[in-house]
Image: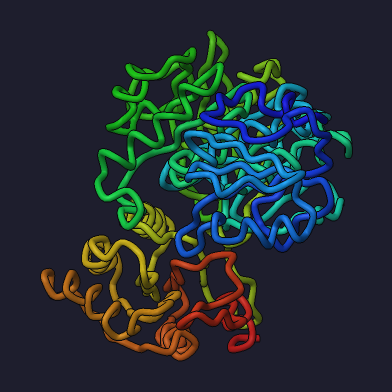
Length: 483
């Protein structure tokens, strides 16, 4: 494809050189540049691509896109200065792969909690309906049993180049839909620009990622962007931010909820130890459904799923018949099977709101005491630590504060930040820095009707200590200790 064609939706500030050259590939990593590639200089948290322009040229780049001042002219290399390299990368990546998001039903799910669960629920229903569906999110890139050989640069929403590559790969494999998590960071950093979303889903909004956005107002405004990029917004009407999102969205709106009179409403909810049953009402149709996953948030996640599938054009009765195919998601409210018949749940809850809802659900299904093992991540929003400590203290009978992913922070400092919240309410707790020993201690306290909740890491099979990632899986620890 010619460079001029790739620049169709980019307004260059300056073009220095020939824009009719043929481009064979795109990269923003100079080490991956090959012959006749464009190298796009983007700035990361620690690395600036502009520092690697000459390395890229040595590796074969014949065009450079940058939002900084151009270097001296180099023979046979075209330089393009733009206002924002991230936006340019998203645009040219989409065009290079022939705008793949226009060929599929694309669903983006945003919110503080529930994104991973909702994309998997939607995927389950769409697959049961007969629509092959690719998933992009925290658990990786998934499409049937296909091997997706695309490096994961970001933990949840890929950089725009990888994202457009994924779309094209999924389509080549036969996907009719793609369902993806859309993080506030991805919206802030233009990773999902030039994506043609059919449906955007809003789950909820509570405190998180303030180390990136600074304030809740900024965080909320990033989430809002999705509903200016999609054709239909499926919005949780029970969330306090829903009114503002609806008012500022440019898309059509479909609401869901339990407490308010939403378009898709759940009523007559019955909670059991391993399931939840409720009546769904939508467009004059009413049907009782049972999901074999407990908890109030299962109801919300199911309603979001129904809305997204309806927005993709599935017939409502078919959707309501197929929601029974929804399966539990690894590391999300996962009951750990063990030979000792102990009640142990692992969950990814790592925000105050998620931990609170998790423990409220645990209280509904537990006859005995609730024991919690959790910590908070290092180099992340410190202000939520004490709040999570208070939530655990109020809603559990005993808490063991431990390490999560301390990263470059002192684990004890993080634990003491959490403990400040617990001390406010004089909650019963202890501190064990070693996460394995903390889990072992929690298991030792369990009696027959008690429940141990191990929160914060869920599906993760590692700990990040300093700058080193080591293997660590809460599930494996429990099963090794209990058999």
